[in-house]
Length: 145
Length: 415
Image (tube, rainbow over all chains, first blue to last red; front, side, top):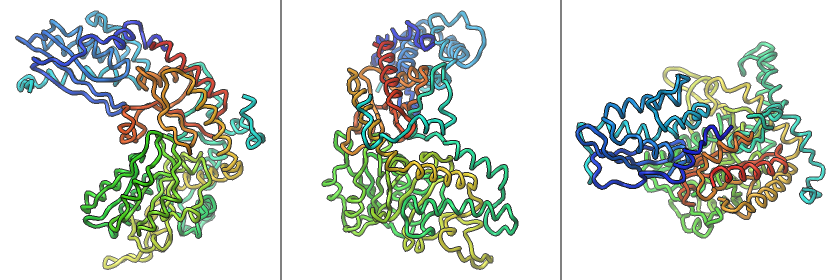
């Protein structure tokens, strides 16, 4: 049923998104856009000594994309760049394959229902695609200007 | 609900009509399918499916020039649709009906073929703020190429064109006015007869995007005095990949071909090619023959029921649906024109249309969510997207009740 998709944690994070604010001293920024639904998202990261010390986002979207951004920013803090990218792969597997759920995902397992809603996978991955783009411009840190 | 059945629609047996549509006899996620996405594509009656099947099973051959029996049959069946389209739009002659892939191609054909010879630097093309992208982008491309200007008729908060602003846009440089007969995102029925008359007074031509109008109201191109009028087969209960472009023969004759190839020529040598007469001049290559034949069956189906009766039924559905949805707290209808087709586009405070669409889908209700290929309309109303329930002749008041109940369920989940 539809509650498999909209689990309590997802509804909670969509109604009260965490880390939902711009970050003045971010040294990595990226914008994500889902042309399908017009959702736009700005991601802010503070990457210090290869560790994500802070993460936030702003933008408006559906419950799935908002909750995904909220939970992602929560789970990134304290992770190295490599760990963050690995988490991205695990998250992608969770949404698009039938492989067993990885233990590394923590709270993010609440998105397991999305795999039964192919039209909504892009909503859940928008924040993560944006993360990849933020982490990959590592050589050329985005200025806070 | 009994009050809904007026004298006009008393004889309209929607349950019998539903029997004609095999797709409607299914359950989706365990619930009876409630199909409310007909503005995107309408479902197909058995007669259309049978006509396409018959073509492939019995009559399949390429059209024109074939001397064998099958080619004769397929040519006759395909060309009969042109005659049916002529009657459907009340065009003067069958030569004024060009087969195209759909409305989008119809508009592109005119923008490209007519635009090439008739639009220059500093000229102006007028569209409206409620156009589908397909009636914006081809003109924008033409303007870019020619150094011409695109002007936009604004709309009011109900989603109606501001005719006094339109009047001001018209001038000696206006070459073309291209507007939708009915807005796909808002349901607004535009006063196209008046729009055309005003354009003509300014010396401009007109193209009417009839994609949403052809299935829902009587269209008479002579009465409207439209220069070009185009619609898609698949929205009028026919197959995808086929549509009709009407153009006044005087204009079509003066236009260069759109594409080169077989069927559109009279003689070909490497020195010089002469083009075929209308309508074939604009029909290069083997067309969508099955689609054309299916469209003929669709036009027969609509004509058999009567477009005026269909329109009356849909108006009752619209009134019932508008009332049902207006009762839902937090729901705002986008598009409340006084002249409106059966489109219910709405937003709900604090709930994204995609979440609404997903929850409704799980209850078997098919609606469209997003910008409906009309981003400027979304911008005008300050929303990124809407949920749109678009109704057709096979929808029922009971289905509207199901939609309203579905929306309540959405609100329960996200409240």
